[in-house]
Length: 511
Image (cartoon, rainbow, N blue to C red; front, side, top):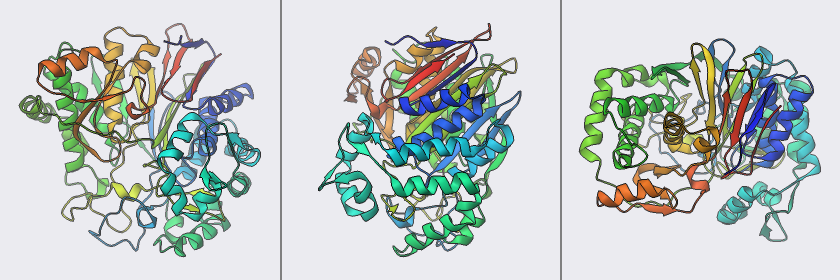
């Protein structure tokens, strides 16, 4: 197991070493934690395009003495049909991409360097090319048919009739030019400028309903965090339309049930809690304007008792699953001033919609796939609606100071991954143990569900399921299907410890 990075001035961690280096360089150039997080996030749109892109979304938390939630999730086109059919891929899953708006909102409010500095680093990577990383190579092999079906994807991600392989050079000249326009002209370049017009025209030719008016109407919202104190740790995450409420709900239910060994003998019950929390998410979560009651109602003591009752009734039921691959990246950063950032950036499914607009080089997400196919659901597709969102950054504070800054890839299982990391911490594990230890996942990362998969070296959980008469699917040790998590622990002496998930291609640095 790797040692944690340790240092006293700053910390940054991400799922790709080049992105972490971009964050470190931003700190070295005089930037703060927000500048470093942005540098890493922008770089990741180039080096990890199966998980994030200029055409994706961001949700982030910034703690500057208070916790602020940045919701840059995009809305469905104004022309989207109310209660319409929900696709899994393709142009009809494309909602407004919000990532660029978040970059500039974060930079303008908290950064000490212009957003252009971070974007220019990404443009240089796209122009000169980067080696295809292990995770990207695996995703390309898995999605070779998706790549071949789209001319833009095929041009970027294949060579001489085959998808790029690990170590091949990924060069993205159209994306580099787009990034340089964004650096020069700001967020308006996408939402009200030439790049947005090019993007919409290219997508319209494929039948996409997105318009320049939809782009112009977008904004990133800065909101209060959703927070709940459990055992002396105040958890800060996103409110609706994020699934952030699931994490405090899960941990509150564990406490309500007085589950002594949730990562051992209590694993079947923990899995049941995961399932029932996911049921709440899929039943109630939506654009907050469409929800009949707020997510806070799902965190009351009465509702927690109901989740516990449901979990106890279903603890022995599980099925086998085939976990999904890729969807999201997390970046975490902190500095000696007390500024902390958890930033989650995503295109949802691996390679998102499977549509890369050739002229701009922008790969588009498929967040519209997160709408419900049930027209009676509050999360039904509708014009201008934000869909249920899986992104959920996390910062934990003690006495008002950040003591746990974390983020994870994992689609609909993000709350489960966060819960297991925090339970490891409560059991005395250090930051590396919390991030690296074996996990279980309930449901597919993209589609969700009630089935259970356990990493092969998670012996205590596998034994507990066997005693319960349940045979979960077995994932390999350090499986990417169990997510990529990264975390920073600001210590009491003013220094930091940080860890990046060995399931990723990442790194954590402190100085």
